[in-house]
Image 1: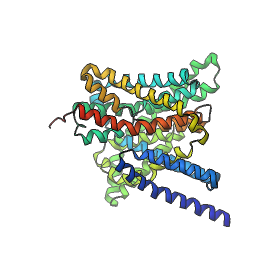
Image 2: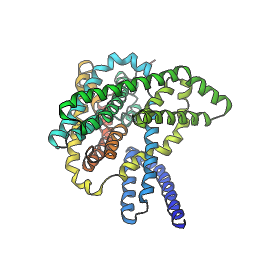
Image 3: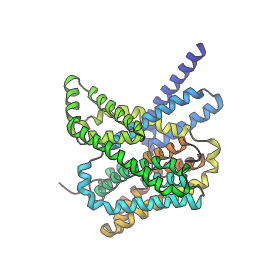
Image 4: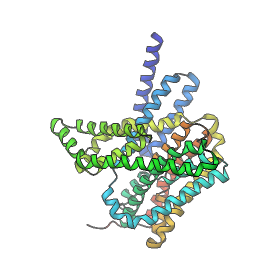
Length: 409
């Protein structure tokens, strides 16, 4: 009992230190101009090294960190869904669809091809890489556009539309991948294609049913529920209701065979249509800042020390593929209507990869080396770090060279 209490006390102390350290890291990273997530991953890796030396986490401690990382995934995807503007996106779909399709197709295919043919990673790991590289962390670039007074220029608005479509398509592709991966691993080659179509069809049907439920909840229940909690309690309690509902919806998705990440995204969409609910996002920041770092800390904690050095060459290839895929896939179609400057600006702004890309790779790593080997995972961590650090620097320089003027309302 005494040993149990000591282990529990030590674990609570470690969690507390990580919460405090994440706040300090966020401030330091902002001052030096790099995304906080890079600091969080480094913090997790330091925790990994300390645990290798002193073995203070043990199996139970790692389980708790896994749970905290899952909560981090939920708040990350919930926020992405909450910030999505579906009506506006549908209105802009015609304008953004060509660039979006080129962006997803080129970046995904190049990611798969580089992993499969150049790195020899196998079909399933290469699919994880390809789908991870379709995602974009446009939030990394948005700050630079806002700082330059260009976010609401025609090019800036198109960037936001394409990025939102990117998020949605990457999450749908992630859901399909998780559904068909067991079939790809165990299916008979003779019936593989039909089995993949069957599992993919079942998954899309479940998604349609789940999406319909979320839409009905959003239309007929969400506003009344939010209003009821706003009447009986003051802030931040209504925000806690929103967050709690998001956790329940995420759990429902998990029970249906999706991942909690996909459910969290849909939960965010449920509340995104209601302006009053979106106002709660300011209160949601506290929960977001508490839990989201644990996802990136978990990435660092799962980095295998031996795979880091060996993955440098592999990571360099993935970084090059990540850059070329977005610059060509986004910039190429954008050249048609926006010219050279607009195409390059859009392409480079879409290069950073962070949340969704690492959620895909983290899920694959949890399945085992047959899905995502540790070296490939470390290589994608390198992609996240490099694209998130250097992407905004390049975008800032391009915006200085090609200023984008915001339209006056």
